[in-house]
Length: 271
Ligand code: DGL
Image 1 (tube, rainbow, N blue to C red):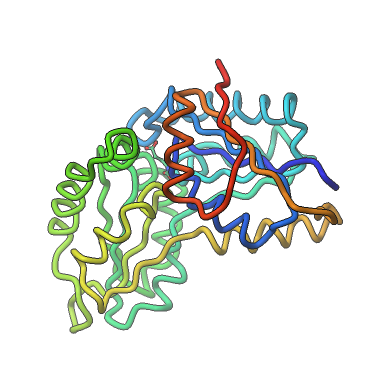
Image 2 (image 1 turned 60 degrees about the vertical axis):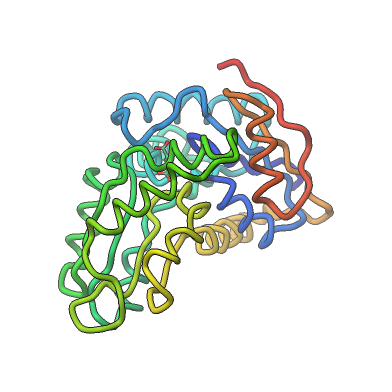
């Protein structure tokens, strides 16, 4: 089936998921929707995120005829995935959530750091997940107000200063990192934007700390769902279309900086 797969995020963070999707599914067409005009999601409350998630899903279905949807945003997954699945029972939907389970399994010290937006780490879904794993590891959870926004702005200004300062503040607030008993040896990136700050985070936590993100498991899950419904594309190469409610030039610059493949020129959706 040659219809595209829709992928959305509040901004550029979901490009980290798109990268993994494109690597796993090179024959597929993708439409990537960046909702920058309504970002950040993480500090705006569930009502806003649910309303945007519904509007975007309707747009991607009506205008682009998507065959599957990937919510490349932890905050939107936490707030809206159950509702979107109920409203679109015929559409395969994959969400992203912080990888607490693989982190608990990988950690030797059984101390796992989790960074995410305030919306994600205060959600009922996240806290149920955390509770279900509480006998496997201790989770040190840090909401990172402003970090996704700083990462987005760094593309427009080509200046990472604020991103680096925020990463340093939040990492130092979580306590010692390392591989000795009592130290945090695994860090979960619970926001898709943070993948683009990974180099700064690695410098701050040190080489012994494993950093986990969710792009690859999400790509595997998407592939599996398409296979199960015989909906995989059979002819390539796939195209990647970029759509934004914000500035097309900014999305284009982010794609050039972070994706290792060509896309069509970004266009604006005036939602
Ligand atoms: N990229 C998003 C996430 O994974 C949210 C960023 C925002 O606050 O808009 O949670």
